[in-house]
Length: 174
Image (cartoon, rainbow, N blue to C red; front, side, top):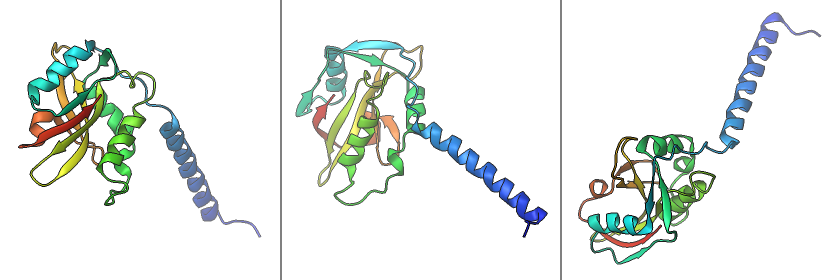
């Protein structure tokens, strides 16, 4: 028995939807294109910038001697493509440190791996939290990078001293 015209149209529409879904999935599998690098900084400069904002940081570990720098706009482009924030937060697994590590792990692709970024443990009076810390230029014409926090669960990105008030910083690993 043959299909009716409306059934054929519906099937054709469904094929187009599936083709678009395949294109979307292929796009998600491709690595995020590298950022536009607009500067470079040394480990000493990274440390000085962080200690300027958080003079009482308990432990600061910096792995490399040099880092590349990009802009807030480029980091937002990365975050728009990254899917870490799509995971559902659960007490203990996956919680804040898992989101931080996942987001940092996703940045281990060409171009993104050279940026000054790492894991930061911040503490309030009765709480602790893991968050991504990074240095970025606000725009390509800027001459001084600024320290930002990125929340892995939501992609929220703000200047580090403004995202949380009355915090202490226990550990930073970049």
